[in-house]
Image: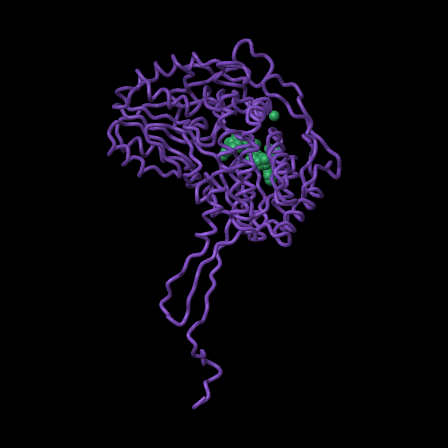
Length: 496
Ligand code: NAP
Ligand code: MG
């Protein structure tokens, strides 16, 4: 089934029969072939999703009934967690414990939205107090329709689940396109949905490229909403194209998130969270805290510890015991990170450690964990997302200076602050112009809490109740109940 498309409850070959190689980024070996869907396949899938929504009754099921399917999918994921995590390692390159965590989170996401679907049966209707007693009104939340979900390669199954779970819970139907680089676990999700008997057409999974398959989903007139995670330029293009049909859009884009460390912070704790914030998933994390600002008094001490610990990171194949850093996802991403670090050097940055392909790793897309200091504020390395294990670090003196530097970005996805002074940490958290703020940590992510960016980091929120609302429309139903005729055109007969 890994070389097929999942459309309308069946595994099918693409209409035009194209395929692409799946490459293990650790070895550059071809491990699988996937199908390349074209506009013709997308059209069939969207029409199936349309029928499942408009005629087959998926949105009319109670939330509790839909929750049954979601919990079955969650259990299906958990039943094969290790196998799916292994597939994610081979496809994406990340270390197994990270993949295992992702897959557990994906299952948890289906469980969480099952819970919201059940609650929805009781809370989906809100009475609206009106200033006119002759009328009563209520607001009803309803599923918004057919969703085109387009996801990236950094958290393949998890990013798919952040969209598919709330969309199905809300009563929408979905056409999902995983990233060409990492499609295998989305196909596993389709297989699990099939096994648990999810009605045909409710979830369709089409592999293929962004420019063909993705574009066809974006342009399809019968899609009601586009849910996208990926790069800024593609997100911006999708938003522009969605305007033609007034499709709903939610965008989760990139960032260049700051991490402000005050001089009262515990140095070892700070080093731990800095490393977690930039080396986890090889730094291919939209919310990675890639700009670290350290208060002057502890700057040298902290940087020394950080370099010392970073040099100890075990690099290797994701299935090897104890490995903490795998390869980057692709040759293209590797070339980009290599190029970005070269440009930083040329701009005058100091490479405190890393900065190249690790010794002995000749095949595969390997890059050492890297720390850059003295990065000019107007250089690309400070301003643009690198999306690799590369952190820029610089000292600051005052709180005001740190906040100004942190907010001086066109992005606003995440920001983090570390200080023992709770009042100061809260003050800085309030001053950050970012959608996700961490105090005394960086990156922990919870299904219950809203996820999304300020400024050019995106629009809309995923996860939690906010992620559920992404897939709902609001309808007002207002009833005239006075008993007296309205009498504007047709006057009541005198004496009648
Ligand atoms: P991308 O090009 O934006 O890809 C994200 C998804 O969109 C993929 O499924 C991609 O398909 C698809 N896509 C590409 N062009 C499309 C189009 N014209 N219409 C519809 N769909 C389209 O991102 P990327 O190339 O994977 O990564 C590049 C950069 O994106 C990274 O360096 C990073 O800055 C950012 N990024 C951000 C996140 C995040 O979580 N915010 C995640 C990953 C990447 P294919 O890839 O299959 O062609
Ligand atoms: Mg791959």
